[in-house]
Image (tube, rainbow over all chains, first blue to last red; front, side, top):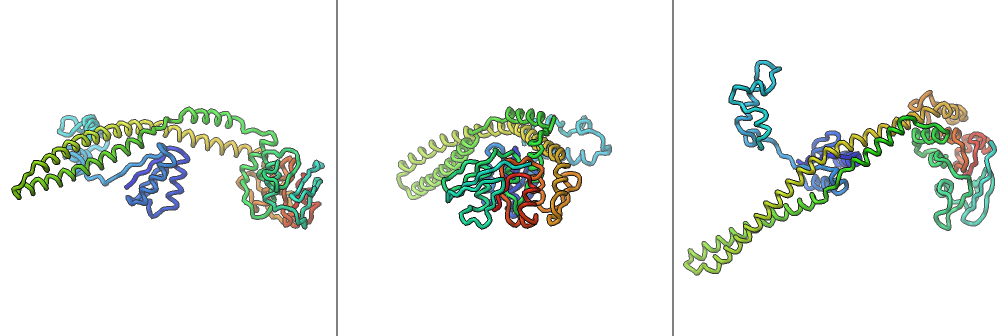
Length: 112
Length: 294
């Protein structure tokens, strides 16, 4: 899908109008951002916004996140283990200390 | 208050003078919108337009210059303009607004014109690489075919080598274009923080403007409410005690603002409105300013 985020009042207003007029192409709206369908018309709307508001509009192409393909097994395992921790108030790094799970710092430095 | 006389010269050169200019039944009279423009804008924009010689209109005038049923009316905007004309100010809100506007001007982030060029370059380099990759595969197929047929593959092999050289060059370009685009996108992502901050300032400015309008509107609301109360019963409007409480049609609100405003330039009143007042004399007395009926 095409994620459009606006960074000025006028760009936000244009996006709002676009969303109102082209509901069929708008997959989801979030205030100053919207997800557009990945059709030529979605691209047309994104191009128009970019044409009109230049860098006040950010357009990203999104795809579903498949954790089994996109994230290392160690990361998945860490998430699973942490979400079934006994004490809900334990911060992640304290939880991971002394285990095989990666530290949050290590994960921050690791590009996907 | 006795209104100062105004002079209306119509396109047929006829001159109408008076605090009240009644153009009902005057064939040469232009339509109300044209007269309104002449009243608000002053000198005629084109030779065929009427001219209206009148004292300079106040900032309220654009809101009330045409008095007719069915027009929309920015009540808060008009009340704020009225308040300013009557000497009220929005106090601290305006100083703060000025400060925020300055901050917005300073926060204007640099435009990254390069980013679009870099996107185009990366896309072109990608397409060119794909095209050459296909070409290399095709020629390689031909080399195989010539060899299998026991022919002389030298010429085709030379072609293949040339295509592969070209592919390697273009691939290098592609990587460079990709890196440049990545770098610019990272930069743009960082610049978005300042855009974000600017947008918050814009929102703040809009809120302050609204607050200022509200304060100003509240300052003259008693005068407005009195003018609404002075309307003949035919208008059936009630102002309540604060700007949100007005109940009535836009025309009633427009008339009340016109009455509360110091009318120097004339207002262009629809004959139906005159009738609703029960005549020209009553209309003029209510508005207490120069009037053109059209």
